[in-house]
Image 1 (cartoon, chains in turn yellow, blue):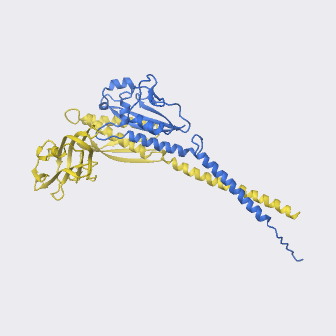
Image 2 (tube, one colour):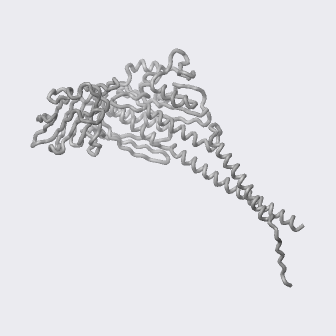
Length: 270
Length: 202
């Protein structure tokens, strides 16, 4: 009789224990699922994807505005500003539908360094273009050579073959008050306001690069300020054009109910 | 009166405890199995679906970012797709995206290749729409690729593309074809097209 009474109590206790453990484990599992869902949804606000989209649009719009403003004989600042105002207005309205505030301001046009992003602090050793089959035009106009070093630290332009070896090289430096270039151990005094790297036969650009696939690279490019223009054909048969005349700082402010992001993008034009 | 303690040599309590622990472990095991099974069921509307949506969202972002890439003064593939759009709606017929109005008109090029190799190959349902502003008050969404109504757990990835007059060979012909209007007649600014890629598990 005593033994069966004890068994009833034990069964009840075991049932309570099981029930308690089920509740605890369910709550714990639920918390894990909830936490991971919150984490997975954390990218639904202003994400890197939206910022990259805005950066890309702003870069394209600024380049197109510059192109539009230089269609005539000289740069038309009114057209340039109006294009960007219209762009800004349309983007603001599109983002307003998503509950995101957008504003855009641009600086004045500035002379660009030859660095990757056009700023003095930008990457100075960089590849302008890869897989070139043929270059039709390669010119430079240096508006400011005050940063140009002597022969120990020259600004260099290299054509590299596909194994990375230099097949053509031009070194530009200051000697006294003159600007000189050295190509294939030959030194020439130049006018920095217009340098035709391809057209000037003394530089032997065509001879060195003919029937080869190569890339073009700048070294120590923070030494020079100005513009360059490069066009031709890629190994894929597509045409290319790389030009840089000026640069502009485009500042974009994006804000939602949770985040606010200010981004200043150096845009090189055209 | 002296207290009298009775000690019994009985191991049934230990057995009950052991039984309770075993029962609890079985129930927890069932619970874990149920939760795991829910996670891998794509169309179940549950909190676990957030993971599927997140994966689709990341996949879609990578796709449109790759399509929107360009270099050396060339248009991106996404922009080329908009510029070359006939204004028709296309549907997947197991081999090609064909126009609803003219079955011999199909989509070709990198956008079609990417959608086919990434979404069609994985059995992911997808639509692509172009949203653009008509005037200062109205916005229009036109289907470009339409493969049916998306499920409740569909995700939308959006990529905006700027169009300029210089991108278009003939702006008036483009407007007639696509209904995308020129929003600014004073400059080369044309319009901004919001490309929306909707994806869902089938």
